[in-house]
Length: 260
Image (cartoon, one colour):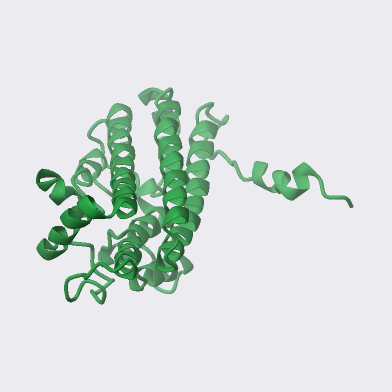
């Protein structure tokens, strides 16, 4: 059989994956499923791009890394705009099928946790949310042990001849990136002397800000839809999400702002 648009994209399989659980079913449950399945597809693409980006940096390909960063930033804008679609669903429309979600929650998205880990926000306790021996926990464990995008960026700077402070290139990659005063001194100097490195730094800040923008819109959407109710996955709902708004993936790039 000749390859077709539908067979190449596996459309029959994809379109069979939206299975509402509510009676009727409730009209808005399909929207809820589609939006979250699309989110997971974009998370898959972001992970694909971030791995490619880190490899480009380690190979010294600054221009390719810059281009890939722009692609990830564009995807993040799409994620933010998808919140607009979710917000067309009123609280009563969501409550009409919310009980059918049982313990299921976006809080459990292993791909989003992988994305956090890949970008540098490591928190080992996240593994405990997934069953021992499960494939999802194994994926997160591999990401926990792997170098982050920030580590690839630091190696790229070293390749460009910048003398990085001791310990930065062999830091414990299972830990979240934390501010480093001596590294900030270097970043301030390269902002004034290395145009290409400065451009990549600014795109990393854009990436950090883009993820924060998505977190912010997500919080407001949850508050608008369920108020102060507990999240379906056992989290505190909006209260938990608000606590993520102060997270910075690349704290050193924020700390140097007042010194530039």
